[in-house]
Length: 472
View 1 (tube, rainbow, N blue to C red):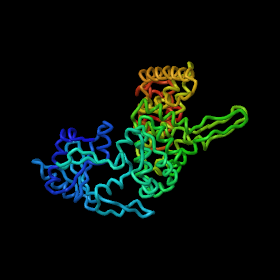
View 2: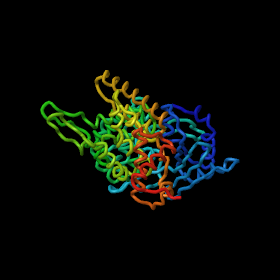
View 3: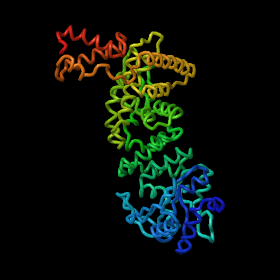
C-alpha cells in the first residue's frame, strides 16, 4: 500500500523528506498518525523517526522555513518537536530499548527502523510510511498492523508478556485503544494482561488516570471498564469500584449488581453529555453502596445513606487516583450527595418548598443533576423506564416554574451578616448566623419572597423577639 498522494497533499511531509535526503537519513512518519490515516480518523500529531539524530533533523527542518518556527529540544530523551499552526510535529532517532524488571525507564540505544518498530506497543501503532524520495509514501508494516486494523484487533508486535512486563502502562493503553476504536484485544495479548496485571502497581497514578479518563470519554465506556475488570487491572487502582460487583441473596430477596448498574448509568449519561466530570459523577454515584448495604427481613436489601457516605468518600478516592481536588471534585461530590433528591420529588404532591431547597442546594448544577438522575433509571422493563422519565419531565417543569417565580438558584441572602451586625451593633457571633439562617429558611419555605424588603421586615420581627434594638 502506498500513501504518496496523501503525503504530497501536506507540505510538512515533502519538506521533512527533502531535509532527510540532504542529511542522508532514512526517515518515516510512524505510529498514531499512520494508524489514524488508515482508520480515517483526524490526527494533529505527527511523529517522525529517522535513522540518525532526531534532534538534528528537527533543527534542519525548522531552519528550512522562511518564518520562525518554534522548536523545542529534549536532549535527555533524544527528541525535538516543532509547532506548525495546530500541528504538533515530533522527531526522534530510531532506537531499541531494554528494561530492568522493576522500572519503566528503559535503557535506550540507537537502532534500526525494524528495532524501533519492534519496541512499539501494538501492531496498529508499529506501521511506518517513508518520506525519502526513493520510496516516498511506501508503507512499512512488518507486523501486519494493516491486517489487524481490518480484523479490528489490538495485538502486540512481539511477545506480549515481554511487551507488558517492559512497560506495564501498555496494558491500560490496550484497553483504551480497544474502547476508543471498538476493537477486540487478541486472546494471547489479553491473557498476558491478566498475567501481568499486578505489574501496573509500578506505574504512577498520574499515568494511569490519564488512560482511564480517555476510557471514560469513549462513546461506550462500559466496554473499557469491563475489560479493566475482567483483566483485574481495575483491581490495582480502583478497589471501591470492584467492590460494587456481585449480588447477595437471602431467600427470594436479592439486589441488583451495582457494578453493572453503574456501567449502565455511565453509558446512559455518555449519550447525553461529553462532560468528563459529569461522567465521573455517574461512576461515583453508588460507590458507597457496599459500605451501606444492610438486609432487612421486611423490605430486603437497603443502602440507606449511601449518597452521603459516597460524598464523604469522594475526596479520598480523587486524591488517591490523582484526580483534581479543586472545584471539579466538589462538583462530583455535590452530585453524588444530591443524586437521590430529584427522585423524591417524583410525585404529584411535590411542594414548592422541596423544589426550592433542591434549587438552593444544587445551584447552577441542577441541570446536570437531573441529567444524572435520568441516566440512573435502569431497568429491563421499558415501560417502567418510560414512566420514570415521564415523571422527571414533570419535576423539571416544576423546577422551571419555581425558579422563574422565586429565583432561589444560588441565591445570596437578601440581608448579609455585615448588614445585620451594622443594624443592631453586633459583633460576629452565632446570633448573627441564626438570624441569617432563619431568613433563608423563610424564603425556602415560601413564607416570604426572595427580596430585601420582605427579608428586612422579617429580620426586625425576629430581632424584636430576641430583644435586639436597632442602632441609630
